[in-house]
Image (cartoon, rainbow, N blue to C red; front, top):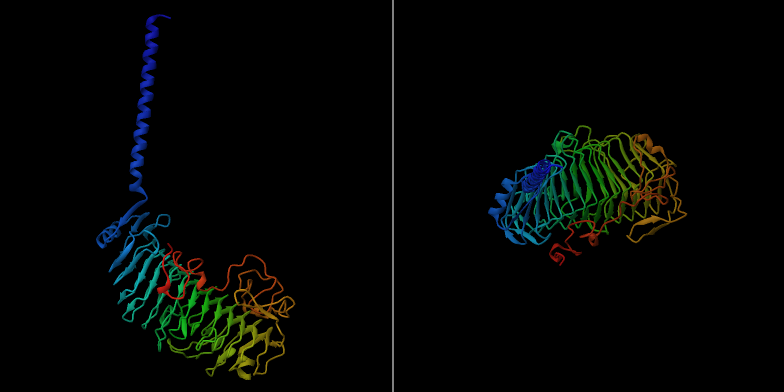
Length: 507
């Protein structure tokens, strides 16, 4: 090959090599530029240790930002959050180590933006003249936190002010001593809003008060009673909540209260206003305490099923028949109510107590309930009321009086052969006459009871009472107690104990 051709080939090869080298360099520079640009487009962690840094960071927060508060004790910190994250990139504000950031004085949270998560703080021994935790945005969350022993000038501790799909979960809330509710939810008249979830919290001792305004939870107001809230309350423990008779005061419609445990409380879950609420699978352990009770029913369309009520001093279930011409703050007429598959045992009062208001209610069905060892199975019900407004089917009453004459199908007197399980719940043993004894007459109400107290599936042949002996599927509900704090309920960083002052973060 001529030398000129060889030199030409070498020249071409050098040009190609140079081009490849330049191309690779350009790719490397582009990759470096992209890497450098990523923090501006996504996750940024900001560490703060004083109020000015916090305020500055909150004022500039972007989706997917994480604001970390260094461990320590701080006074008068205001978390004023107007910025918003997104569903895939929320703004996270957290303690450096959960439980190691103590906020006192006038410290409070106000979430006005959307898609914001607060995690791991302890609000302790502060002072409040307004809500300490306040949420008015949507899709936000307060989790793994504690709020204990604040002094307040008769104000609400926690307030969800409209918005939608907010969540309050795995928190410890205890020690309110003044009037006004611990948790207030303001309900909007739009069914596109609300839909909040309150779950896996510990609501601890609430000082006893006198008159209205001492509730632990109020879900709506009287003027909001017909608003469709669709709020969900599940897997919460209410312990020594003695503020007033209404531990939960439900004043809105289409809510679900399920799988909660009430222990040693002087009060009840009250459907005070509203319609079409579901009360399902809750445990009430009154422990004989004065003022302890189960469920009070007022209003239309409620379904009260699968609840276990044990050793209350007042009625297990209390029905207020209401007034046909009730004022907005009065007792609304109670119609079209289903009370089915509940177990009520050892009440010092009646299993079911009726309070008459001179009107005949419409279509109250009481079916397949188990009453054992109460002062009476049913009280306050006249023969006239019974024949015109109530329908009893398939109930079993053992070691109870049934002081009103009822049809033979209303109650059977049979020993259900109950035994206590490891959680202290009385359940039917093998061979119990409750097994397969339920009637299907309640289905005329238009509501199917498909699961039992444990959340397991009931077969076609159902048992009387809250527990189904041969139920199938995973157990998703059990009674809660203080030993569950730091595990399944309350903050992950709290140790087991009886009072907030005994709780210390895990080392």
